[in-house]
Amino acid sequence: MSIGATWIIKAELEEGATLSPALTERLIGSLNRLKAWQAMLHVCQIVDDLQLDADQAGRMTDWAKSLAGHSRPFLRAWSVHVRVALGRRFEDYQHEVDVALAAAERDLAASVRARARQLKKARVS
Image 1 (cartoon, rainbow, N blue to C red):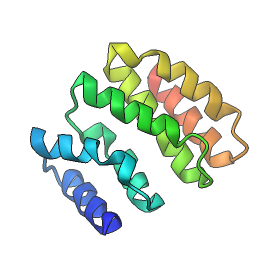
Image 2 (image 1 turned 135 degrees about the horizontal axis):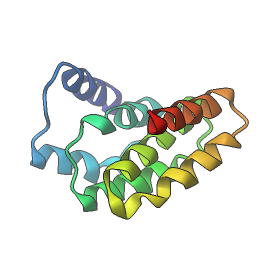
Image 3 (image 1 turned 90 degrees about the horizontal axis):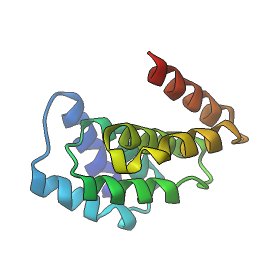
């Protein structure tokens, strides 16, 4: 069920919807219970659309760090995106930007290294 639910949330956010603070907290509170890689990917892909407070950003950053060794390269790449995006938005997590990018640049998967290059380029622009 989590795959469908997170896909709907992602689709709605892409159409301009916003999550209420209560729904955002429920989503962040459920991160560690997600088991399906597709649901985890959807959540990583919506980080830019979430209105998070610093505590929620910290919990999401920790969760994204736990995905750094996932067997799915695309999920590893998007977990880097989460860490970089939140590090750029929240001063307390700025150190995550360089750490996540450096690790991604050493990843065996080309897709992870490519995501790191895109994120570095976006930082300069």
